[in-house]
Image (cartoon, rainbow, N blue to C red):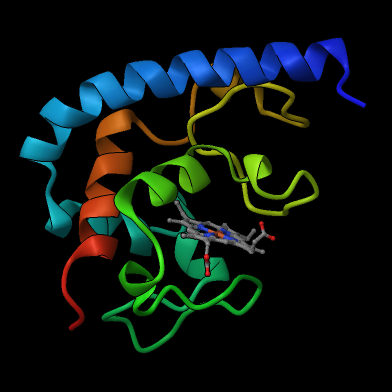
Length: 134
Ligand code: HEC
């Protein structure tokens, strides 16, 4: 069953994704795989490396699947949606929603109403993950 709050959340996310994908065209042009690499490895700003093995890094977490060669089984758009809000794919996921502020718990006051990543940060991460294997 979809609760009212959840469906509102889905609408808000759809709007955020629409805005993000409108920006994505522009952002993708200026996306930097190098900035994406730095963000992926940042334990505070993204924390991706705490849960995932990442291409180009010797060490990574094991809570989530390895993202090595993810470009071979995922499109850029799938990556955007997954990173924006992994709850779209798995409502019980432990992966944080990076471009949604809906239905979050225990958010420190300073971070309320803010998304964990900016649309630019998300594009930079996608650029790195979609780059040819290294
Ligand atoms: C707290 C752990 C955690 C963090 C932090 C996390 N993830 Fe995940 N991620 C997961 C888990 C677990 C899955 C498996 C699917 C699920 O349960 O939602 C997953 C799935 C994925 C997938 C799909 C992989 C596949 O094989 O299809 C991608 C892509 C992904 N994460 C990217 C990221 C990126 C990029 C970041 C940082 C911006 C990140 N994740 C941060 C736990 C995490």
